[in-house]
Image (tube, rainbow, N blue to C red; front, side, top):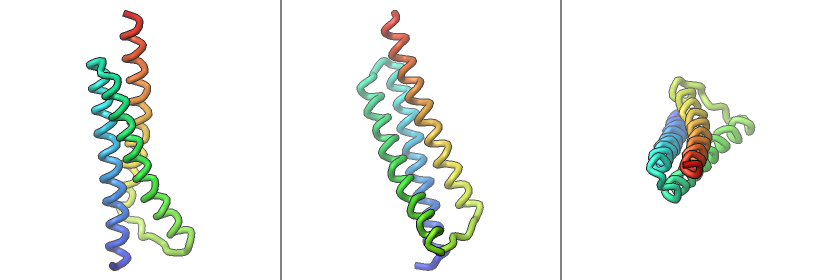
Length: 108
């Protein structure tokens, strides 16, 4: 596999795992809105699992860079990092929203 193909594989894996995490976090919010808190927690756990996989991909990329295997910085590479950071933020906000939905339900 060429270096360019490896870089593409890294970027696409990061985008895929990050997209899965964001989708699961959104599903967690929707579940919490319906007061389906067990489902919300399950979806949030799925988001965390996908982010962990994305983190492994990113760590692998960083390790290779630290070992002298420089990765060509492309727009796709930057885009994949953007997806990852956005998914982390989205998961964190989903947790806060779930907590708020629980609080609102308990105060009714």
